[in-house]
Length: 118
Image (cartoon, rainbow, N blue to C red; front, top):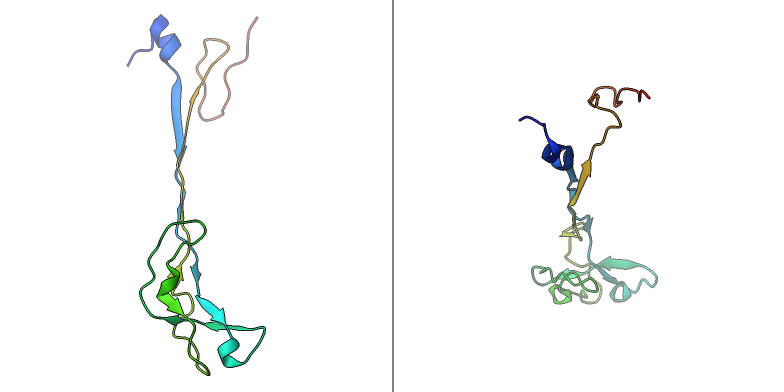
C-alpha cells in the first residue's frame, strides 16, 4: 500500500497495542469457629451442605448457606482449597502514532530515526 499524499501523511503511521491479562482466583478453604471443638482462638473446617454458588457481590462472593458449623466434637467436611476465589480479567488497548522529524524512515531494529539535518 503506497503512503503518498496529504491523506497518507495525516492518517498514516498509527499503531495499536493491547494486553489482556486473565487470572483465575486462588483456592481457599471455608472455615468456621472452633467453639464446637472447645478450642478457643483456633478455627476448623466448615461442613459443606450444598454446592457453593457464586453470587458475584464484592461483600459476599459465595452463597454462605452452602456451609454450616459442624456439630459438637466433630471436624467439618470442607476440604482444604475446595473453593476458588475471585478471578481477574482485564483488557487494555492503546493507539499511538509514530512521527518522524525528517523524511527518513523509522528503523524498527535500532529504534532510531536518522539525525535531523538543518
